[in-house]
Length: 156
Image 1 (cartoon, helix red, strand yellow):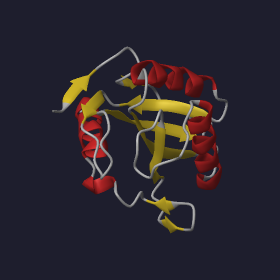
Image 2 (image 1 turned 120 degrees about the vertical axis):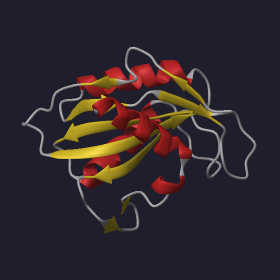
Image 3 (image 1 turned 90 degrees about the vertical axis):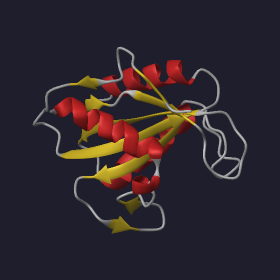
Image 4 (image 1 turned 60 degrees about the vertical axis):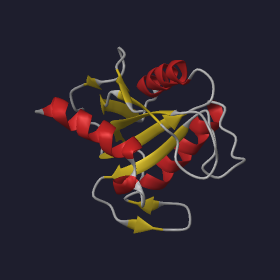
């Protein structure tokens, strides 16, 4: 069953800051431990980062996990950010952040404390060993489409 949740941090919308060069859409997910508390900590961690600015977050979506591994439901959201980091440096930052928040990669598409996916980075199309933009699965995932649609509804 899908459920939409809101907190003080999800959803929000803030003004753009012209001192940042790029925009990116980040998918946020997790299903181990107190995910809601972790998302709030992530929000404040990003707010303090000198090379990131959160422009907008979606409401939270509680939804069933997909894949072959039986696991708890996920909490998902998307965040539109501004950054001065290149796409490759932003990816490194996202992977570092996952580790900082307890992510250990053991089972592909398995349970995780925090999953951060770069969905879009500007209008960039890229296919490399470590990064594909836009994210190849974004248009097939409820965990991205529903939060993105809810976020866009709030723009109007």
